[in-house]
Image (cartoon, rainbow, N blue to C red; front, side, top):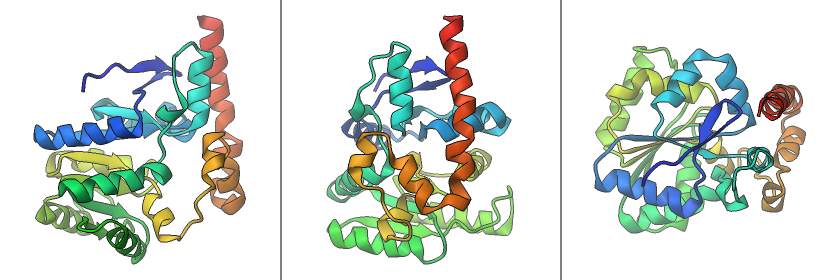
Length: 251
């Protein structure tokens, strides 16, 4: 799929729907390519502008879809023809992704969550999608490059020979780990998946999907985990607002 990214707020994003993202994964497998398919939301924008390693990660990424209605709305205000279905979050995507993986025989490895949580989520997915091949490893490891835990995790991933590697250790931890180990990861599609499996396993309550459609998931998450998320949802958006205003006035 030819990449035609939109550039605003200092980053570039790809306007991709769930079927298009699934097609990208299928293409990476068919062509035996290793592609990073990541995403952007308000939190990643803040990190991108404050963390050189995040900028290096996104420079390596092949595609960056939109994960957050605020980015869709800001993009539309800046004149880009973005649509609601081009906002893709894993709470929605994980189900059609796993359905296609089961049908097409893709092997999936999920790295992330606390010990036991990812495997519980994997069991739920296997029960729902007959024939799904999925293995897991918890994300509570020492992610320092070359650490014994990180090397053992890489060995487990590569022994499984996944077509799809989902790394769900939260931003920016997951991006840092992928960047540090990219040359040693043997897979096709690499997805930055956040707390995806925590939602599947029920370790974190999934926001009602109507809230996602209206861009209100942040409020549900803030009320669910105020101590962990207050800074992300109450302070970081002010930085993004400054980026937006600067782009408006410099246009």
